[in-house]
Length: 149
Length: 149
DNA sequence: CTCCGTGCAAAAGGTTTGCACTGGT
DNA sequence: ACCAGTGCAAACCTTTTGCACGGAG
Image (tube, rainbow over all chains, first blue to last red; front, side):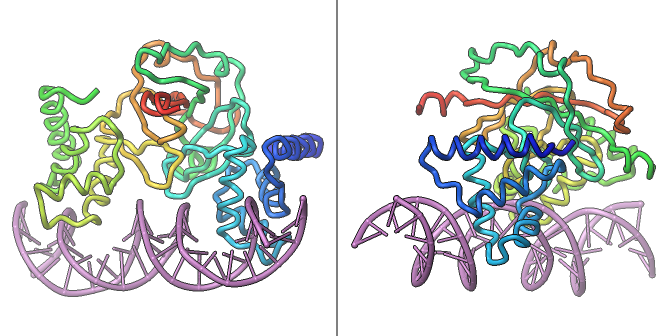
């Protein structure tokens, strides 16, 4: 479910606006990382993004990719995805959506479902927790892994 | 929401039974790791468990803790928790439940709510995904982090 | 005797940090 | 000139692996 050209343009415009507001420069490196992330729908790791970005900016370092991702997350332009694996994965989609996670190969697929977007959350304030948003993780087996057995 | 003594006993009995069935020895090390995990409700990392277990078994190695956790997960006696951080966290509770995740400090709290346990999942079979179970992640700020600002 | 789990140490990821440099303001 | 962002390399943290040892069947 990768983004259309128009969507990508609007996400870039949003990035420019947010950076402007927060007084944070949208450097070439940050823009390249964001674009690489927007171009993908498979929730890549930082390293996978580095591999892409290094084609455009051959001198970029892994550290900068990590720092750019931190910045994008801080700015609300990307999100860290919860994943039961060793490497952190990133998601360019900030609006509410859900995930299918393959128990065998670790793939993360987006799940868009209006019903899941309207679950009434229990009141967590008695526990002292201020809820901000939620998402549903569905675990199971993806197409490739079901095929294999 | 840590386990009562009775619950812990029954979980240990379950472990003995499962190991028996599967022909897998429940070694001292594995039992110690499982007990350490059952004693906690904060979804510890492998390293945090090592720090606890090493008190009882001073010669135990980190590798064994990792291998024990792998075995427990494989046996269905524990679960890896999805978490947007670098270290994998483990959960002694296998039955369906949900999580409150603090965006600031990364704490994971259990959320038990019968309503959330009965969400009608969309049909993911057209996407080739065979759903097995799900859980809801609520993100926000925990009590300590709200207090601080 | 054989097999499997373990301990140790080293290797293999993944992520962060110290420091010098640079480009924009 | 200043400051923030960057590149590089090293450090650091987490997890896995190779190998030898030892205990249970």
